[in-house]
Length: 207
Image 1: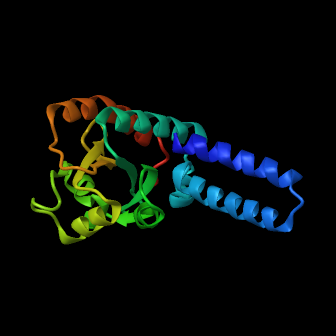
Image 2 (image 1 turned 120 degrees about the horizontal axis):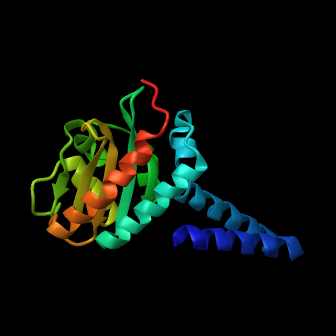
């Protein structure tokens, strides 16, 4: 929805700019256009600048966005992201996000599997990284600081693997209130993440 609104706003600002003659108003519209373009950069087709070497087709990336938007809605999560594992560098590359601020997007654009705020352990170990409450439960200091910066209380990082269990990336769903990893979340993830894995497995992956 944010992408749709941003695209609509961009079109509206551009239409207004074409007919506006007042220099002050034109400057304001130009600023709004630049801000909206920056917002869209963080919202759609992130892979074009976070992982250009992967040469991900726009159609594949758009399907990933739609699939993950739907999954996040079903989970009732407030924020989410998908990072793909780049086999050439071992880094996690941000492919999709929702709800993160610009600082978080820039940080997660390229993260190492050892970075707690990148949920690298889920990719490295192939096991979920679940923290029900960052304020009361055991939580790495960096992950707690990241969660506080985003207004998050619960972190769910889930590995995305191929049919043989090899890591392909990490899907993250985060909540503004404490949240256990319940059977509902587990079932939804088990249904949706294989589709995400199939899309990631189809990407060019140069070892």
